[in-house]
Image (cartoon, rainbow, N blue to C red; front, side, top):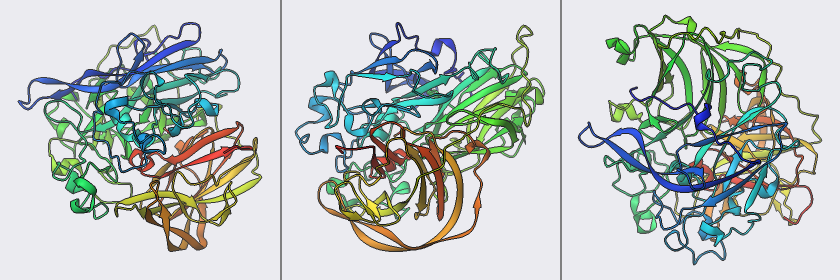
Length: 608
Ligand code: C2O
């Protein structure tokens, strides 16, 4: 924990729109992450893709966009400047991806540039500006996705998010989302309202700038020369560990050309916060509001704060057994505050989720170091893979960052007084549902025998073309979820896989109602792949729920756009679909959404 981390919610890290307009480019740059080269001494730069204002530098993560729910709309022109660059990472062209779509086969990244499409995750976006994967565009909009509509995207205004919350923006191009985000295309998008102004005059009395911190947590691998590394070829370090040993992925000879292949999941061996490896932040002895984003591909975390008495200089600071936990307060998560603050010791944190926490550094002696620990190893939640720290003893992915309580107290800014039970005025309140859909998560295999995570239905339904379908469905198959405009629905997500999946539904802010165990028969059936070949999937029969319905966790008692679907459980969410058009829902393990664990849905009448 040697390098200081920038705060994504401080003035210098934010865009300041002129006349409610921004022009943001996606381009390549080099950035210092704190990585040391092969000699272990010399810092080396890393080529990344970042967001930045047109004509200015780009950064990873992109600078924070901040908007007030009461303000005028924000217009963003997203300019793709990723021409004349190869992809920073190996592209698996066997997946269903932008240039593999019907009519796009003659395009390539080398000739046409990298296809991108920015999505404001958590935004109550109009369909044309939602960043749907098939709305991708190449540099200068020369190649446009089959559903592309507009160069300018409109956000904000009175019918946009309605409540304060922490959105984020990231790339969503079909089949290469994991790679574009890995290269650096992600940033915070903060929404404020009258109750949560981000200024000291906020009604709930929350810590405000500079005592509000924004940190995007992401894991990465690097070459010793500085480049980002993604193990995609047989023989790459970690390729065998993550693929063949797990048994889930292919032996080398089964894949055409031996690669590159997408991974079932990706776990980096370095933890980064706002683009800095294992960083630290200096804090005063007072309450801070800490807003976190899990921007990883696949890494579930269970966060805990650990106090190292004596601070960074203490030799036991590196001893995993030393120290004691520091409880903290959860005040919110994806969207809106909770009704009240809750004091807890540890918290689950899935890819795509945000957390809104209060940490009270008065509770530890001055000079103390507080380490943010991750109590889970390198594994799909529920699965088993070797932790990076077992393979590389000097790489501790069970630790993310550190706070050093070392700044003098600024007495001109009074401390805040959040306590267990403090009233915050938030919460979630969704109308009664007019319909319940039974949907499901499956683990099938693609045409090459690779594990293929899939969504589908848990009951026979009629799709918008009039076919009756049941079970696993690939991305390109006709719409099966077609809520009426303004309808409130309950979606029951039956997770028939062995792992937890963080499910994201675009457009809506939902209520996590409950979870319950279930039993069902898995019946094998074919899945039509994007290229017409056949993979194998499943449907569920004889579903029976077991035991009681479990209430959501403390961090889930807010408006949400993410929910963890636990294996062997049905997770029930409730939401209102109040804008028309095409949207998507998917697993936010980026490797999964790129490999078919994503489905379109359509609100209101067609065309579809
Ligand atoms: Cu964070 Cu569909 O995305």
